[in-house]
Amino acid sequence: MPQPEWADFDAPCLAVFLRRCQIASEIKLETYPVEQAEIGLIGLGVMGANLALNIAEKGNKIAVFNRTTEVTKKFYAEAGALQGQIIPCETMEDFIAAIRPPRPIIIMIKAGEPVDQQMEQLKPYLSAGDIMIDAGNANFRDTMRRFESLKDSDLTFIGMGVSGGEEGARHGPSIMVGGTEESWKRVEKVLTSISAKFHGEPCVAWLGENGAGHFVKTIHNGIEYADMQMIAEIYGILRDGLGLDAGAIGDVFGKWNTGRLNSYLIEISEKVLKAKDPISGKPMVDMIVDAAGQKGTGKWSVIEAQNMGVAATAIEAAVAGRILSSQKKEREAAETIFGLPEGVAAPKDGMAFLADLENALLAAKIGAYAQGFAVMAAASKEYNWNLPMPTIAKIWRDGCIIRSQFLDEITSAFTKDPDAANLIVTPAFSKMVKETDGALRRVVSYAVMAGLPVPALSSALSYFDAYRRSRGTANLIQAQRDFFGAHGFDRVDGADKHHGPWGSGLADFK
Ligand code: 6PG
Image (cartoon, rainbow, N blue to C red; front, side, top):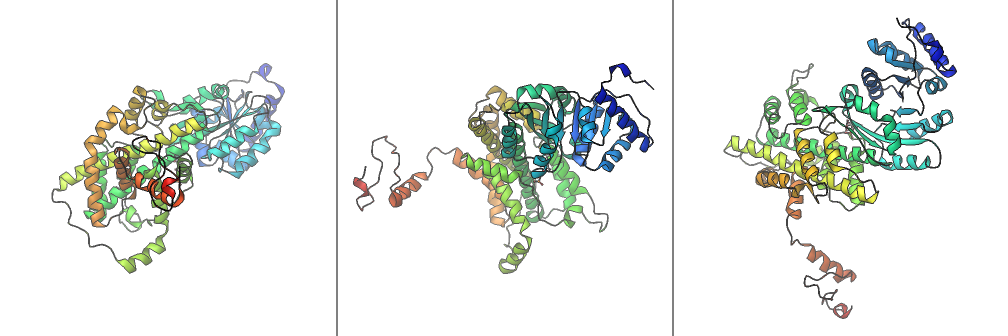
């Protein structure tokens, strides 16, 4: 076993070493020489522990701390061959001393108030240049506030979106970083080493100052909600319209996963549809209550879209879909009053309809992603982030929940035209929409006549129909507003007359 270079140890580092020997001997493990850690991590819950192991496995020394020391000990004891890369710490003093300054410290705990409390606890131990990194699913407004609160200090803050769940955290997540460029430089190497790679390209990037990383993660989740809702709506058509069982629907998704819809969400949909409940032997999905949970990121996406005046109708529909799903008792009561519609005959050409369903999902998905990117473009202006759209698409190609082949196509579209007004009008995507919008129209028509709810698919279709029509119907809304509130309107001939001849003297009012 290599011996510690005693001469290289400074006093705090030695203290950490001795402490670590104590922890290690308590759990009867061999000790290793300590060099300072490249990074620290607080919070060894599922995500924190997996991220820490990933960091260690990629050759980075990491110091870890958990409020409950038993958790730290257990984590270290189970780290196996990675123990040599991990410095388990029992006290905050040891933890801080174990990290090479300026110290990047990942905080991976429950979002919200606990993060503020953790930051307050940490602050007295930190010194100039140290970086607190919130890696949870934070509301970007909290991130902005935290960043701002440190503005006049010599400490700094990174808001870091991490996507990919437990598996991603352990083996390669997609990482969205917001903070100063200087703080990014300090963590770039470690984060690049642990991120997912798409054909060798790391799925991590610095996206801008303060809340940029958490904002982009929020929109990632908003798109995730829309993607999942649309897949569930197609599942509903296959189950309740065409009468397919779970396994058969799994087969359909499995086939689609080899085509243009190839994505992680379609892949896992096939897997969950084919899984059997070990208790009843029935398909697992048939035993799950149809009430979806949500922790807030979808709702935040919608709120921020509304705040900035961006139409994100498919994402809104997905959030509303989850809300309605959770009102299980009310839905049961309503079904006893209204019953279910009689339905319509399934389309005669089953194969053609399956192709329509596949294309409809693609068309609607384009709408949802176009909306998500439009929200980010607006936020980029609003908060002066200069968000790099091609880079965002790039780092979502692997590691994250919405990873897909499709995101590689979005990367190309935005690389060619980074300032495109909307993804839909880029050459590659306008071609795709032209090829698939007819299918979406047929599928939505069928679902409407069959009484099957398709809020996200139909929202995406209406969004497209509204977006592509140069003469809409808001002229009537403007006339109504002018009628009852003298709000005025623009004229199509550009003439200087801004009120209508509604009577009651308004016509003469200029
Ligand atoms: C990810 C996921 C992850 C998590 C969300 C989903 O990107 O890894 O989005 O962040 O699954 O918290 O949250 P809901 O509970 O709101 O669906």
